[in-house]
Image 1 (cartoon, rainbow, N blue to C red):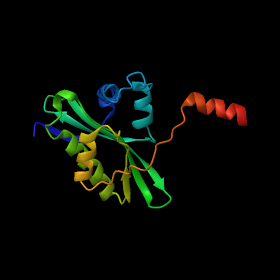
Image 2 (cartoon, helix red, strand yellow):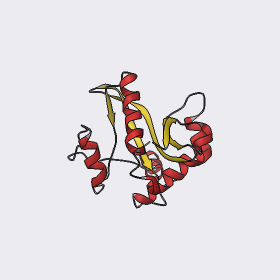
Image 3 (cartoon, rainbow, N blue to C red):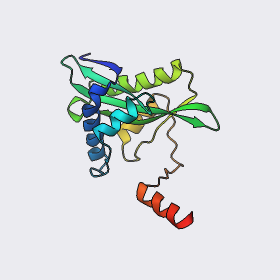
Amino acid sequence: MSFKIREGEAKDVQSILDLIIELAVFEKEPEAVEITVEDLIKDGFSENPRFKTFVAEESDGTIIGMALFYERYSTWKGKAIHLEDLMVTASKRGVGAGKELYGAVLKYAYDNGYNRVAWEVLDWNTNAIDFYENTGAKVLRDWDVAQMNKQNLEKFINENF
């Protein structure tokens, strides 16, 4: 293995953001990323971090992949983790970094008493779906994801409150 998995640090934030942008391009939404290096440092590496990361780092210090996740709570299961992003740069796919990052998140959840790990996967990303199902994950195909962006949130609040 030509890389190691470790917890992300503030010094990794530019690489993490680069991977987030690469993921947005892969998911056909290149303009969707609004977050900045400063946001990631404040939200992930301050006194009260809102997320955790694992990174895949090559021996020369190059970050080739990352997993970003955070705690949430399920009214059915209790303590849970949401895996927001799992990404390996295109030129390094197939070296096992994605599987190792995924495993690091699952091991973190197991070791820390979480009852579930959940995430979204695009319905056209059959490679990811096959991978997740082969690891024992259940892909819930009868649930749709609902989101409200900042502009629509503001509009709703202004019209209703």
